[in-house]
Length: 178
Image 1 (cartoon, rainbow, N blue to C red):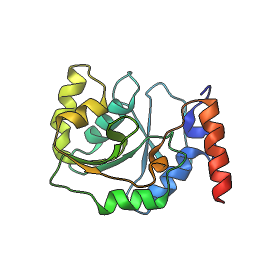
Image 2 (cartoon, rainbow, N blue to C red):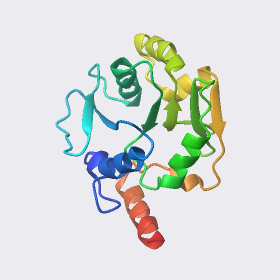
Image 3 (tube, helix red, strand yellow):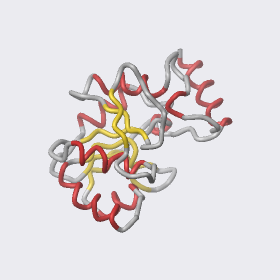
């Protein structure tokens, strides 16, 4: 993308702030995961540095569980410009704490979507095993455990944006919706 995706402005504020605001309605505390080498900061929300230098979503989730292993973590990637409150509400309302995680099925990748998910405390041991084995794929983790898979009618809501062209597509979509 050429810049930190958390700082991109799709909704009038930085994407990290937009998503953190969405989460504030559902979470007692909102933390923004940052690489241990990152200079990223925010004034409205606390940042949680990664526990090891490999920067990726798996380490962000592992860092969250090491911060507090006794709670469920609602995890969002910062590159989800189409995400809205209704999608988060569906995830939260459909949460199954008897499973290791609750997430959406992403038909584009024919797999669970690991970066719009609720991870339960029981996933922590599996997560640690993956990290120790240097297997940093949250998708593979979800495929190896018992998860609650949710269907979503409007799949664009879980689509990410990783290139300048995808960013422009997202901006057009968001502007057309307003």
